[in-house]
Image (cartoon, rainbow, N blue to C red; front, side, top):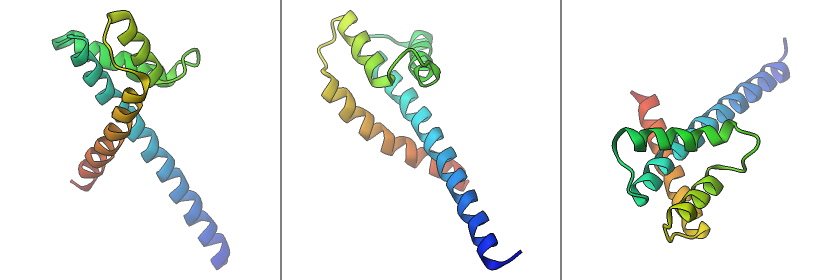
Length: 108
């Protein structure tokens, strides 16, 4: 095996790790988004946990767009006056928080 083969394998391994990390961060972000949305809608306790998991499930449901769309629809149905731009902003903030949490967990 030559240096180029080794280098290619290293790039492929890094790409796989990066993709796995991004997936984990998005799932964590969606869970955090679900908890935030539940709080906005006055949902607490086990119901909030269940709602957060339903937001995460959207990632695996091809019939839905994404977690942001689900939360926007649920807000509208619940009469919560938060627009989609505010939800997207919250998703951006929560992505960074999720990333920090995952990185901290991996470094332990």
